[in-house]
Amino acid sequence: MILALAATLAIVVQDHTSLRAAPASSAAEMTALWQGDVIEIRGERAEYLKIYDYRRERGGYLKREAVRPVGLTEADAPELLAVLRFLRESPGSEALGISYGAAYLKAVPTRSLTAEPFDAIARMAERLADAASGNTNHLADVAAHLEVVEQFGVHMRSFERNGRMHVCYDGELFRRALSLTRASAEERAHAALGLTRPDCIDPNLGPVQRASLDDERRELLDQIEERELSVMTRSRLHARRAGVWASVAYEQARHGKAPELAAQRALAELLAVHPNDLGDDRQNEYADAALRVSAVRWATVTTGKQPGQLILSASASEPGQTCIALEEAHRERAAPLVRRCTYGIVWMASAQVISQGPALLLAVQPLESWRELWVFHEIAGSWTIDVLSPGADEPEEGYVEFAGFVPGTRRLLIVREVKDHSRFRRRFEELRLDDLATVRLASTPELLRDFGRWQDVEWRRNSLALR
Image (cartoon, rainbow, N blue to C red; front, side, top):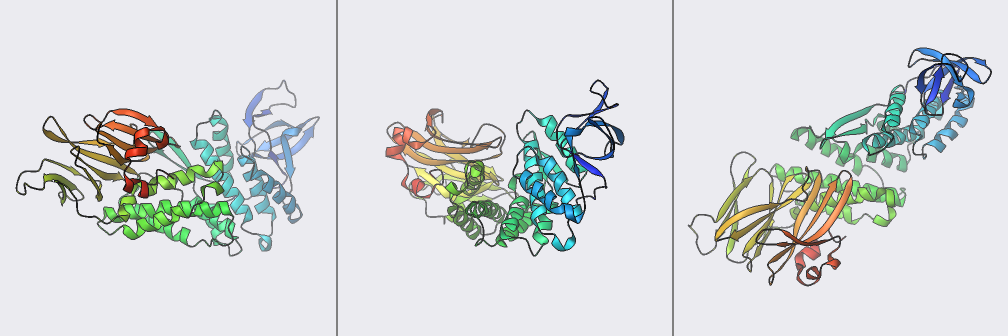
């Protein structure tokens, strides 16, 4: 909640502003103030202002040019709003913009209050949290800005993900904007997008809480009307819905419910995105949605009869565990060639028999946005199962899928796509079936000759890797 500001105030507009013990540049520096800090002016001396900083509970002297006085009357509100509008689109000035937003909320009368200041402050808080989570050489400055906005009741949540600290805005002012009947369609969409970010979900949530959260995210996004939205916001909304419905499909499959409708909705929402409308800064939102939908795309396919001499069967084992057995069709009562159990979701519709191998490939999804490829193949007369993962690092997001087979050289064609520290990488590979070693790889299939000739027709028709 935005706290009330005191009277006779000024806002610091420069970072690393020295608070000195006396009105002279040679005086001892007691501390440094940051943009957005609010101070009370108590006097003037030459080019210095005598001030008191309530946050730090100390007084001192600041250079006059480092601060801007602010009025908090109704007459001052239009000027404060003009500054807020300017700063909300200025990266690096989030703390200053939030400070002016707090001043505007103090000055504007209730009858004139709209969702605009809540939307502006919330978006700047979100941007500041992203800066705190990213790779930057100015983390000390960002940390100081987080302390500045905390005094206005702008709170952040932080949690560890894959060994890195992630910071997120708690979204209170997005909720305030949604509660106002006069909020525009664009402001409502910004709020919904801010409240449904997948990277701001606590990774320690239990399955029941996570399923409930996904239902809330789905309902919130479905309430947003698209007709009055800009083309960018409309595509952002479709991309976010795609990712949320993919999560719903995964949870349904995990609990033994039919995930087909949710997965089909996720795919339809993704296809409604126009990537060119997102601009460079928002392409990662589309890539993230595409990766999440790709992870569950087999949920849209009905399991068919497995052709050939290899038969794959699934059976329940311990609670939540599925065991997969590979058998030869002409040996009905013989022991399985190989058997393995998993707590992941086994997409039986993905089973692909390669009679020339011989081999069989199967998609298994152990996590919401992480899908592996199991390779059943024969080595020295004995069958084994090797697992291909999207990447070598800790699971964040990714999938790997079968794309074809080259019979003459016994090579598998696969594609991997992974999110690694907020960067998305996609690569097409040729692997030797015998040892699954990479022979060739490229960023596009056109750079690999065998992909042009031997890629699987069904893969080309249904995969999202060629988007």
